[in-house]
Structures are given as C-alpha cells and as structure tokens.
Amino acid sequence: MRAVMLLASAAGFYLAPRSNDSIGPIIGVHPHGLLEEGAPAALVDRAPSEWTDADGPLFRSRRIIRDRQLTVVQIVETNGDPASPPSALYWIGVERGTSDFSFDAVRLVGGGKYDHCGIVKVPSTVTSIGVVRRPFHARLRVQPPTVEQPDSDDDEPHWDETSEAWKVGDCVRDGSLRWKGGRFEMAMDGGACKLSEKPHHVRIEPDGRLSIGPRVER
Image 1 (cartoon, rainbow, N blue to C red):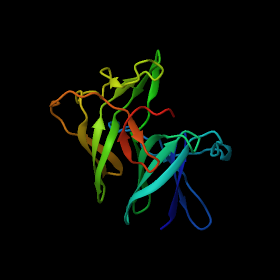
Image 2 (tube, helix red, strand yellow):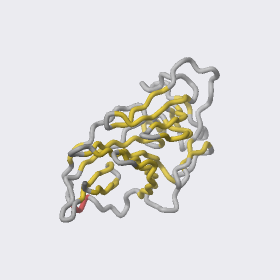
Image 3 (spheres, rainbow, N blue to C red):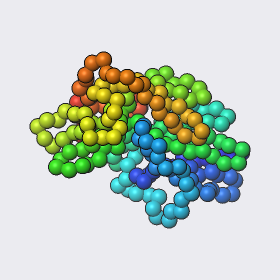
C-alpha cells in the first residue's frame, strides 16, 4: 500500500499518494464549515511555482487518530508569522479504500469573512472539544454564527440572526462530529435554548486547545 503526503496552502489541503518512484495524482479539498456539506475532493493540476508562497499561512499538524483505514489529523493555521496567534483550526480525515482514498477537511474555528461597513461574519465555531472515540466520533460544544466589528468601540461578538445556519437559538449547543461515508458529518442537538447566552471570542492555542477570552489580533 502506498504512503501519502498531506500538503497545505492558503487555497486548501492536498493529498499526494507516494510510491518509490513517483508522486500523485494529487487530490485537493477545500475545508468546509461545521454545518456545511462542502465540495468533494477532486484531482488538481497546479504548476510547481504555485506550491511555495513565502507570504502564505503556516500550518502545524498533529495526528489525532490512526488505524488501518482512517487517519484524522489536526491542523492549526497561523497567518504567516510564527509568533502570531493561530487563526484557524481544522480536522483532516483520510480513509484508505481498496483502490483509492476518501479525503475531507472540516474547519472547527476560523473562517470569518468581511461583509460590509466594518462587519465580519463568523461561521459556527467550536468552543470546546470533548473525548474523541474510535473509529471517529467527537463530542463538541458549538457556537452559532456571529458578527463582529473589530475596528469599532463594540469589540464583542453578537449573534448573526441573518445567517441560514442561525436556527439553533441564542445559546451554545452540544453537537457531535462523525466520520461517515468518507466525510465528516456534523449533528447538532435540537430544542429550545434553556437560557439566552452572549457569544464569546474563541481563542486557539498553538497546540490546538480552545479557550474563551478577549479577541486576539491576528
């Protein structure tokens, strides 16, 4: 059975099967959000000059689970400077089949995008990670989508009530993430919120641990 290399760039993650005398074909996947299905992994064809970017993000990896078929890797992303705080956290799953690989990437924290007038929209975010069980099942605490205004006097996040994913109410929810059918599959606990909560900034430590605290400049 061939070994594989896991590669990362600002555009996504790549799986490169490797034998004694060759590499490839290369499979690429763009990480999807917790509550998004995302596009399936697909073959990519990139010029050699596109793989190296001195100003691109940096990635730290740590294996979470490995067995005969499934490997799950944690990826911590930092915006270029090794001394800067992490900006995103991902889990990458690679499953070996009889003749090929299944490959998926889910973003647990990060992915905020500028919307308008200084407003940044932040997708559903993991606030804490529970025990991870084999073959792969993790209990999570998930904060629904929020909006922020980093350059305003109001530096606190607020619930994004315009988001389609904001249907679980104004509180942090329990959820579970499984590996099923070659992909990550997220399920959220339903029901009304017992108490209304305020959303929080989620901080990523260099080793991938999560904490609640003030917003950190990235």
